[in-house]
Length: 437
Image 1 (cartoon, one colour):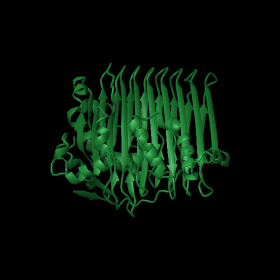
Image 2 (cartoon, one colour):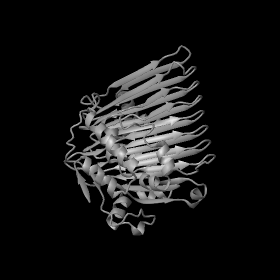
Image 3 (spheres, one colour):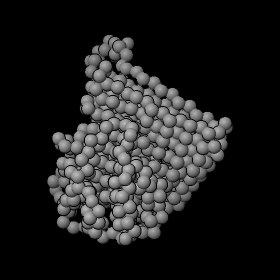
Image 4 (tube, helix red, strand yellow):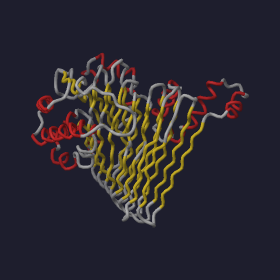
């Protein structure tokens, strides 16, 4: 089944196929009205999309059951995911979810986590099985009036993860979701909702890929995360979309008293990326960190960064942005830090490092930093550099080829980001960087 183009009737059809409750259908239709009325972003890369040609929903499954056994998943899909290393990664995780096109096709979780009452499933299953919990949090921190693509997601969302970690629960192993676009002109609009209740701890990992076609695809996801008192959530992602995909994502976390939110965000592929993970530091002594890397090659425009909103007292935030541009690519930082007048004794640090590998490439920095009280501290540091001939000469004098020397320097440049990843993902990142140099 395919739904191409967008209209009120087609949105109702998506809701009908999913057998949704009336409040969800209403949310979709309200979002569609907002989508029609909101303008395209007036900043960042140029977006050239024909919304009437996008596939908004595609499902090739013969049944509605999400499988927990790979033997029940179509073999061509299993073979494809094996080539991408998805099943191998599952052995290191506490749970795994896989979305293919518009629907989650596979889900598993360790029994010990089920015994701890941890919930890890698709957003559709959560809406059916945990309706009060979903309705309490869904769409509350990312409004369907937020921007045009958040509104579009609200209208046509399909798939995505729902996680609930009960109070006083620590997860020793990460949970992971993997998102795959495989069809030409496909749009993927997953919606993820993560709730880490008081005194709990979660590490969630996301991976995304797509093959290359001549026509553009669209990935417009929304992620909402709630971090309770004395809790911690880490969200790690490496997105390696093909160079025909527009990657336009809204991610935000609301952090309660003494909570910690960490975004570890890697952007390697895509035609254009606009993504600025956000922490709203609502509670006193709450903390937010965002470590990002963006790599832009020929024809790519990576417009990424972070947003930190300080509302509570004694809050702390740290942004570290690493960008690499080569062969005419554009990798830019765009960020916002706001310290409210009531957020006394807060601290914010922003550090942007850019490595430009040739004269055809570029990088820009667009900071928006505001401190509304005299008791707080905000600093911003930015560096732009190229690979020095002195460093190259030093390495080459020890028998290392020029290409290998450049590779070593680049890998050293991203070391701070890489060391935040699990070992198997750090190895994958090294291979992705090497292929893109």
